[in-house]
Length: 471
Image 1 (cartoon, rainbow, N blue to C red):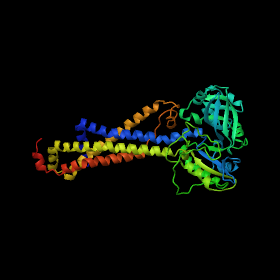
Image 2: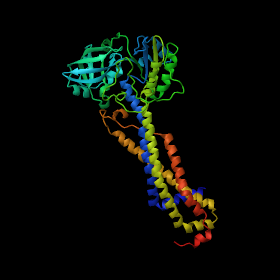
Image 3: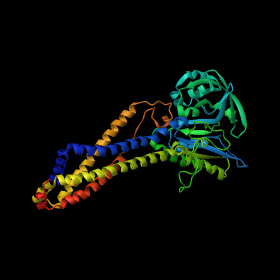
Image 4: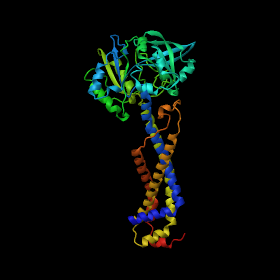
């Protein structure tokens, strides 16, 4: 076998141009597929990380109350059960956030827009303060009880500046109309797709407009240090919370999605943060055919009955489960591209090795006359094909990672519609080692299959006849 390997490598090196062209064809297909899969693999991580900033965490808890008329209101009046569950689950209480949220119509000099507004405790949310980048205004302006921080895009739409006062129209948690007034304390750097999701005010003032007490809120968030452990931590928290309060749970056999669209902050009877134009989680603004797991958990409140507050635990991944579909589609498309490209390459390989057989017919006859068996001749051709696929695949991987690293150097900004999928405005990628190995095995198998018939035909040549053959 060692001799056959040396001969196979020698044969490839003898026809460098032909070997390079065939290797480039294989490498090109591998490069395209690796680039697509590597970028697609980072989508969910980036989306989770980006949206976690806006939804105040990776793991969430919402409380739901239901009156005798069957109308629900999402509110957490007492979070002692949640805090006890956090402690029982061994989680760090320093990573928690408490927020209220409302869908508010902002009006300034006849111009209006609908804006998601989060009520936050700025003193507690240190991470929020760190990531706020002001184009106008400063953190000192937050001393006003009705201070409002807007994104640059919304500020331009309303034509407001720092210090301007805005009229606000909204609904309370029980559905009554209410009005209020905000003063623009700061204008943040525009986030493009997220503009209508990014507005902050004091939780105390927003609670007043929502007609709830200062200590009540609607969304409990928990930041996870290692995003890969999000689901595990959510399961631990839910298990612990069940020991202290009733919790919504989906049946084990339920599917992950149903026909609809998700909204992590909208619920019956609650004014929730879903923007009319750019909120990607708004059911009115999306046409996605499937609903996230969160939305299915949310539907349980319509059919179940209980007393007091019942909690639901969900994660950022439940909200963005459609990203899994996008990634799956991209990977399926990339695999389809690979198969189409390699079908074309297989035809070329078959014809090339058939031509190689005729070029080496006297060489094959000599080797057979020297005692090499038919199986050895066949294996020689197959080894050449295997080495060719290996060199082409490795070259494709190297080219893919060079291109990916170059692409990651460019900043595409955080104010584009694609910023959701980027990491700080840059393309990121995840090396799909398992898929790469699978692709190589597929390429190797298809290469051997395309060369097998010319190799078998070469092995069946009679030595005497082959030696008499002239080109």
